[in-house]
Image (tube, rainbow, N blue to C red; front, side, top):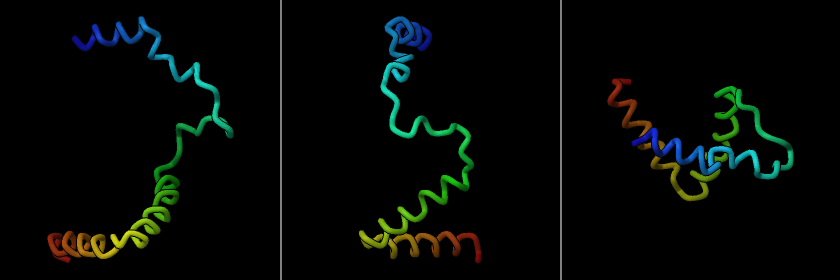
Length: 72
């Protein structure tokens, strides 16, 4: 069944739809971004959202619960 779906997608040309879209300004992002770079990009945004929406207490509570389960 899965092979039939793959064949149908290839036949319809949907597998290459990303090639027909116009390029975004700045080009395509690199496929080999280091995980620490991604983490450095996400953490400031996550911290701002957590503080802005009052989720910081929930993060601290969860972290202390996990630390307690680990015995620290």
